[in-house]
Length: 278
Ligand SMILES: Nc1ncnc2c1ncn2[C@@H]1O[C@H](COP(=O)(O)OP(=O)(O)OP(=O)(O)O)[C@@H](O)[C@H]1O
Image 1: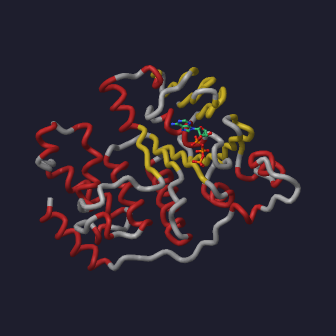
Image 2: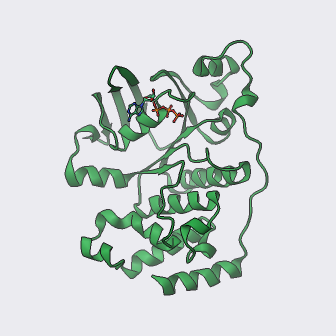
Image 3: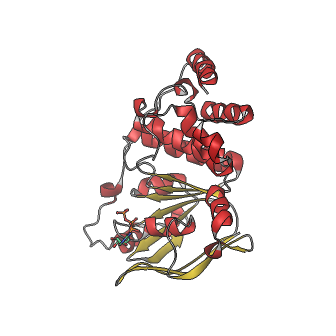
């Protein structure tokens, strides 16, 4: 399905991603771990074509992604949607409009300028927000939401593009443990229910073990581990993090509490407000 072949990215004399070859046969939830500077973000950004490769190639279902230009490249970026640590929403814009931004690649410039979205898209945006448990916030400005809620808005915006792959670059690094759990549960559910591939850069080992089917460990731009969560032993973790015998997994762990649940009537009210707004 997805093949990464000898992918390399250099920044001057620094090799951020070094000759990485990976094959993904079927949709899965994949965690990429490694310490800061290991090359995780650069790898995801090359997959999404935000960053060009220095050499090597990416193939998806027979198409060479690394060779796409213009509209074909934009289509790929919708098919392989990306979410970020800092959410990248428009803070002063309401939540539904932020989600509708996920359709920008398909809109005419004029329609975009005047926020003219088809009714069907508006309903779909609200359905997606409802699915992610945040429809009650649909009419609020994005900046009024908590970090976890904003990350779910970013996921909703990604889902508007009907992507086959969702790339998540440190999606929970700015969140408290409870919101981190909600966001990871959401990503896992999207994989389980929709069959989309989810590829997440993660700082914490326990999150990768708990949520992912396959874990890829990077160190100094190279893949040094590729296996199931069960195979990710403390020794393997030491190798990935380049740590000594005093390596403690607790240094890469998060404790997790109980998630919030919105009241159904509040959600319905907010849905009506949002429909009136857009
Ligand atoms: N645009 C850039 N220009 C120059 N060097 C870069 C650029 N982007 C990344 N690098 C370098 O490439 C290396 C890998 O960075 P990258 O951000 O991919 O690592 P990472 O594993 O995602 O780290 P973190 O967890 O801190 O985000 C680092 O040495 C970084 O300084």
